[in-house]
Length: 267
Image (cartoon, rainbow, N blue to C red; front, side, top):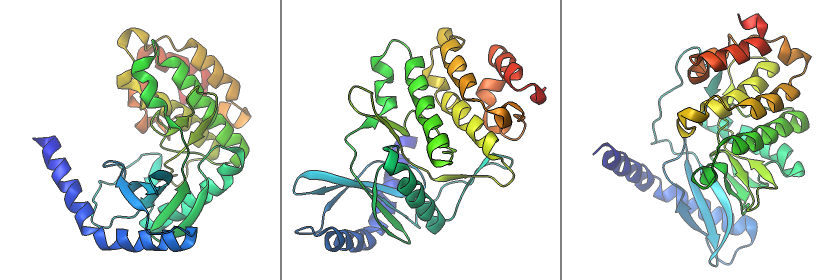
């Protein structure tokens, strides 16, 4: 019943956006030189905005994020290390991140934006989450995800703040990765060192329910990789500011002990 209500609510939100969708489709056709308005196919009830796969002539050409002012999402709880910016700032931030990341293949390529919309070139990748049921262990996927996050930090000087296996994409043989969905911003006072630590730990935290209980402490290889990414500022950081968003890890004795070893100032 709850799922049905969510679906009905989402359809109502989309119905109210029909005029703006048509306007954006026409703007995309003009900007991209298409023979006619592209077809927008909803990607599911994702995040704080409306998201669409964009097709022209039967071929997917990109992905569109469109602010939906009718869509209501709760604000993050007080004390979280991230915040959700206003609609136009979300679009601006993601456009800038994609502009910096695309040169290294770390993000999709942004092609067009409006104050309430962002269009990116299609990447023929799929989320790492889609491999969870196909692999005997989730840890190789988390290792790949952390490697992509580390590249983001080093090559763009940016953090993600909503890392998950759903937001890390890969090609079919998982040799190339890209990051998407930069809706969240770091909360005021969260240092870049803390942001980088949070990205890696949040990747695991957000995957907790997909890690079989017997595997939750088989984190040796992932932890060794993570430790190799720590610079002096990260090693000197405390987990205090990001801890409220990491309860799954910090409530686990083995994880808490491992993280306390890496970040002794958090004791």
